[in-house]
Length: 98
Length: 293
Image (cartoon, rainbow over the protein chains, first blue to last red):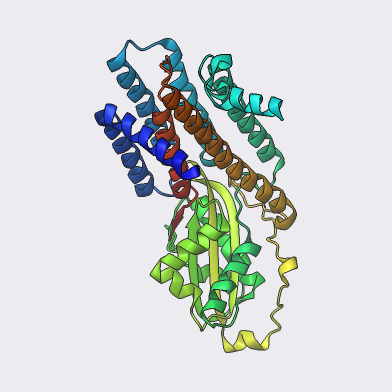
């Protein structure tokens, strides 16, 4: 049953990725660039935090771009992206910046 | 049991009762998560104010000493003895780096690592220094040193007999920084004749040093205060990972059932949130590591 669940889930993910392949490509590319920059500035806490802020900003803009293609961007959807991005930012601030 | 099952479905899967979006992903819950993150920041600030060491990391001289000798044991080398003079020299070096605002083996005034060792009356035949900054955990420091050929050479040098550590917080280049200084030594003939006190692991401590013009917080008896900051920083780090893993689980469940039931809804994209959080979790492996020199 677990294998069936996993197969179904993977199938759904692939279906969704195919539906919006360019959007997800941009998102994943942005994610990898984020990790590369973090590695380049490893040990520099303030710079790391700024890179994370930039990635969070990129993510919110990506959300606006992604949803504006389907329909107009509802405030509720934008708030959702902002809340997730800011929650992550504040969590990482605890570790990185005092 | 049924109530638990209903609660589980209400919180984590889309259905009629939660307007076809997992309750844990509703905006009010997201606001709660943000609120918890802000409260954690405030609590951390409070802990720092009461914590003598200030910036909380899970790095201690005791742990670094244990891990160093563990590496030496793996390579069939004799363990190093903890030396108070080298520890003091390491502490003086860290203080000097903060006061002169540099990150290097050699100071802007030309001071070398050996100067600090000699100032503390450790007459050496061999001596060495490893530096690290901005790590979160002792294991990360040792692992980074072992990956670097020159630092690894220091740790595994068979000529060394003694070691001292300093873990000091301060402001370097305008940024709160945790410096780790590791000093190695092999005493010269003269030193061998003097009684060098072998310090038991339970006695490891770094003396407070009220130097002038330093914006560092004081290092007093490190073990007691370090225990509190060790537990807290490790707890915070693990809690954040667990929370992000929880979010990912909720997103996956909500996504799976929404797709399975063919629910069309006005909502943010679960898969994109999942990808974003996955990259953030991946970033933890990078940001927990610092720099070595």
